[in-house]
Image (cartoon, rainbow, N blue to C red):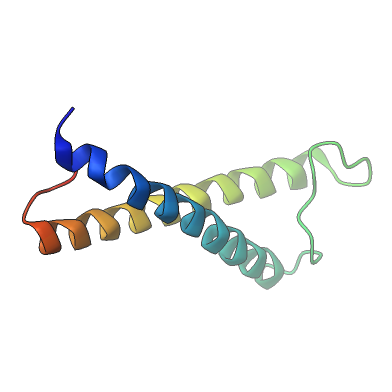
Length: 88
């Protein structure tokens, strides 16, 4: 394993936690903006339809993946600018 990859691990962990929090906030805003209840349904929520549960899960997954990729890419770019080595 390259030294740059090892050195990037702590940065990646912080960015992962940050991206999770950011994605959660983005999802809440998008869910509210689409005219739904304040809280997205859980899979075991008896009062919500299959469609609503699956749409919420798909939307949440897409947002989490996009935010995580954007934050990871920005972090790798910042490390590259600082060190001259791409962490990966």
